[in-house]
Amino acid sequence: MEKNLFSSNPKAYRNSPWWAALSIQLNYYDKVDSVNQSAGGVDMKAWMNSLPRAYDTPLHWSESSLNELQYRPMLDAVALQKRVWMKQYDDLVASSSEFASRISYEDFVWGCETARSRAFSGAYSGSAFNPIPYATVALLVAVYLGLGIGSVEQAANGAALVVCGSILKDFVFPKLLKAQKYVICPLIDMANHVGVGATGNVAFEYFADGFSLSALDAVSKGSEIYISYGPRNNDQLLQYYGFVESSNVHDVYILPPIRNWNIEALEQACGRKVGPGRLEKLDRAGLLGFESSKNFDANTEVANSIGGVVLTRATGIDPAVIQALRALVSSDEEWDEAGEAIGNFATEVSASNERAARTAVRRAMEMELESKATTIAEDENLLKLFSEGKGVETEEVLAVMFRLEKKKLLQEAIRNMA
Image (tube, rainbow, N blue to C red):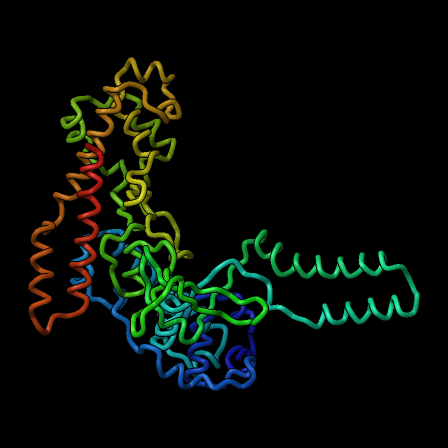
């Protein structure tokens, strides 16, 4: 592969992000040579023909469809994705005329989307079981003892060193170094995701040098086996997989940073005024978020470049936000007793302060929900109409499903904050 596409600059391929490297491999088998020489001459053509050729992800949506998501962080994430992927392609084109002549940007994007939606990863276990070192050691031990060169203890010590070295190489060092390996495995890549209640499990079989998909329980004939892609929120599922999971336990909502909240409305809601010095201290502590997006252009996993307030279905509002609000709405007496230190508001300072802080957070979430162009009931009715009608674009349905899930998450958080 490197000889055909990157003969002049093999480092361009080797140093690519995992999704770009997999895209190059997919396009090579699809457009250059379908035979995988490194796997014993296996022809990949049949599997390549089984792969989707188009994806219903927001990367391909129109601006109006993206706006229908009613969720700024997703728009920012898709814009970042486009910039990063385009730059990666431009860098590859600049490093290799062979790559440029064979792989178009559309081809590259198809490969990236295939990689992002079908690859799985885990802690790299070094390599598969190789019996040769162990057989060699056994032979050397037999010769060592047979010729009377040394004692049984010495032979055992030598064999133990080899075994320990193999264990360190294959299991210990990779975990300590947190090495990741990304794999697209034919057939297993067709398994669908469920956030909770997976009926199948994917594992690397060390002694068989392959991957397995096994049922976790009895499965009736003809039923589908679901696996878990990991704790994916709906932002990730929609952006890279093209679907939305209802009542996703891993879902998140990113509110605007505290610096963009309507402080006057919060004061009215909690019945307290924000005293002098509070906002400045919170800003220095980094709890107000950022005035503009931070430079995360190398990392497409970052969807919160302005330091927005993170709300999760699993754990609720970020505890640091409650801490910030305790300080923000603190009375002069509470502020003085805390030594004007934000860190001293990490736990409850008084019952009245706690009520005021939680009321302020609840009001901020209510205003976020009220700012949406449609209500939960309207979105539910839209989905009902979509299910009854024809000619509805997939992106229309996905946009409404996505924003409905976000609003439900906000609504849950508001109730829990009461």
